[in-house]
Length: 338
Ligand SMILES: O=C(O)[C@H](O)COP(=O)(O)O
Image 1 (cartoon, rainbow, N blue to C red):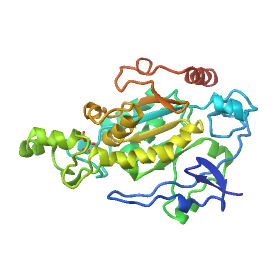
Image 2 (image 1 turned 90 degrees about the vertical axis):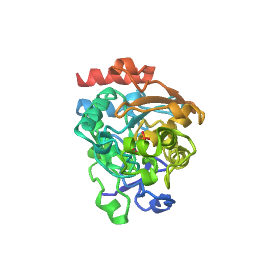
Image 3 (image 1 turned 135 degrees about the horizontal axis):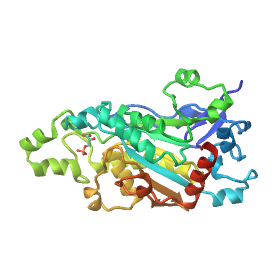
Image 4 (image 1 turned 90 degrees about the horizontal axis):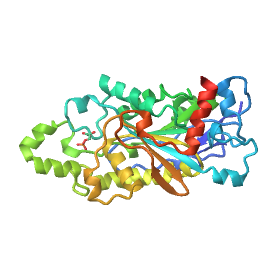
């Protein structure tokens, strides 16, 4: 059984030996943690026995575009180009134990509270009808829990699988040897570049006590100014340098190839990405606040990002204006699964 390696920047699966994954692992250049990427395997879709299989069986383009969105079996280059519209979902993690205690968290790795778990599940319900082909998370557990819990609600019922490429052994030991199982899996890529901004010497301090000690204005400046870092930490601008670079280098190519992507990350790494997507100025981004566990939807089309979901709204219907393709996807899911 020949294994294939998931090549992150190409967003595709190459035969083992052809993919020099090591050369694709970026050098770490600062504070927080882990390397990214890993193995995964791919083959053309084949069997169509069940309704789920039927949903995914109609494209010769394998997993680049969810087959449910590719009605034609003979997908030519031309029609593929026309279909190059992809969904981008952004989710800030649910409430963490340190959010609950009102502590500066930054790159400290704490899990979700029970409320955070519920928020993640609720977020999953909101996006349950939107296709997801790849998931990116930070290296922090609160973002990873959020992504995984959200996907438990997804109607497509694919299984998120964390890609491990820290070492050759991790890569080899996490291979999947069933084509059918691979087709029912979604690669999850964790990168420290999507981590919360490093809050420096504020990490672990209580936000209210810090404001009492240093003054409300000073703390607000540390928390919300664009280019003023907290003591020995990252400003939003510094956070943007690595988060937006990662978004452009690793995630945009997936969207360009038609893959629908979900990113589960943090207040400030997502603020910096939204600043880029919505072309906000450094003044405008100051007032951008993201709630925990509220997914936002963008459509990537012809090189542009179009925001389709408001960060606040009472229900899925109220939040998202579906595109024609997403409405079609949902309709097909209804037909296949109801
Ligand atoms: O890191 C933290 O403390 C929070 O997740 C984000 O905090 P902020 O709202 O102060 O930027």
